Length: 119
Image (cartoon, rainbow, N blue to C red; front, side, top):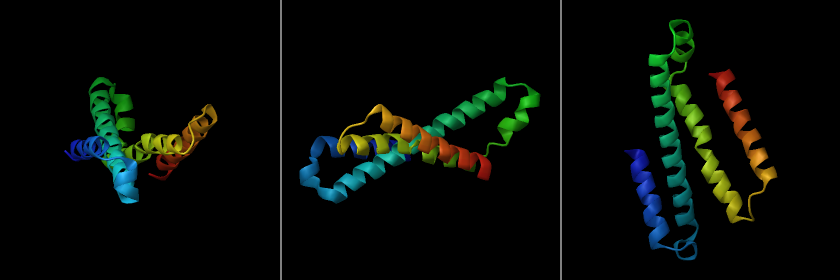
């Protein structure tokens, strides 16, 4: 529900105003709604994949999947949900090169590694 509301707010912002007319607060609202929508969708996809994998996988691997708690999925989704926000921000200030994407992948990999080791 939250993802749908955030995505709807983004679509309304894109189609009704321009960045010059809405100002910095409107641009911030767009990025926040984009982050909320992508993080929510990532969480829902990861939770569905976990649920499907728990039904399919054998019992000896079941404990590994059961250790992934909803809170851990939320942390992963909050990191992965940053991808479109960061890419859009980089594109708006001068373009995205292969080097930028490589650094973004490294940054997100470090974030996911931290969540994996910490939680």
